[in-house]
Amino acid sequence: MADVIERAHDLGALVHIDACAGPRWTAIPAGADLVSISGYKLGAGHGGLLLVKDGVKLDPLLFGGPQEWGRRGGREDVAGAVAVSTALVICKRGREDRGEAAAAQSRALRLALLEVGGMLTGSDRRLPNFATCTFAHRRGEDLVMALDLAGVAASSGSACASGSLDPSHVLLAMGLSLEQAQGSLRLTTGYSTTEDEIFRACALIRSVFEPRQHHA
Image 1: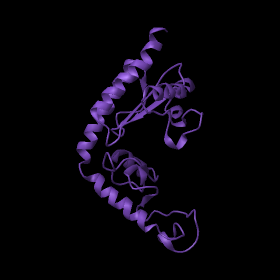
Image 2: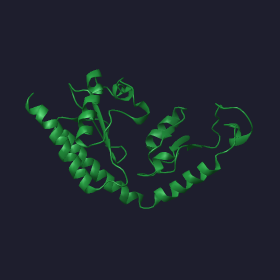
Image 3: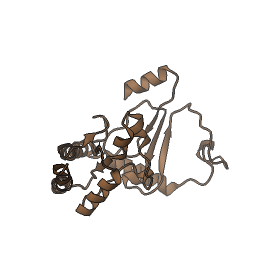
Image 4: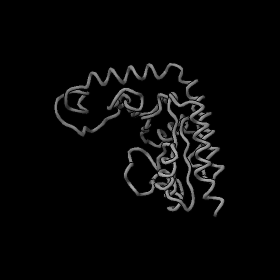
């Protein structure tokens, strides 16, 4: 990430890191101009924070008093600020071990998805708890429903795009075809996910997908 930030700055561009789910699993790279962090992803409730590098000018979206250095009018959410800052401190404890455990769990999920015909999406430089793939000739909504009936919670895209039937613009920008993007599947692990749950999820994934493949 440091090389990306350096190259962007050499070109005169600002760098924003979407670190909404990051602090629980990995350290946030230094040097970015803007970093956004979501409170509920850390167990701190709704709300979040935006880190702004000194010298970076932002036009306010909400106008009012001089709160938040003129960037956002309205009374400060003191309780939310305390909650997020406390969550960040807690997340730092044992983060390396937590990230390694999550990476091992997501590797098991990705292997199970590959075994039943999935094509992995994204690079290895991802959050350690993510397992994402796509299936040709199958729709993500159908995959999610089949897994849900079997007892595995999954999604076909990001939470902020839930309810939309449109394929992910991110997958399309990565070069996937429309058909591939429509067959996307997303699995994640949490801090409380156990090895037994991963073992059961992998077995259920194989049981859901393999019969369909054998008839193809």
